Length: 59
Image (cartoon, rainbow, N blue to C red; front, side, top):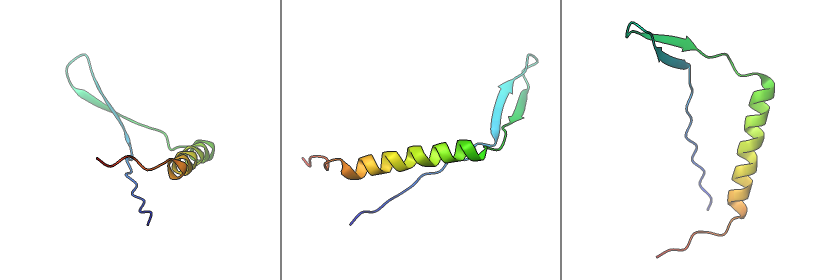
């Protein structure tokens, strides 16, 4: 039986340190459809490659 488990991380932005020592939050842009399609293709390729790989040896 194949059990898939996906971990997801959503990044809203990043913090940078200002010269006065304060943190500033920089919001990231929403991904484009082209970027999302590329991500889905990469994940799909990796999952398919993992499904074709031989199982790891059990000690």
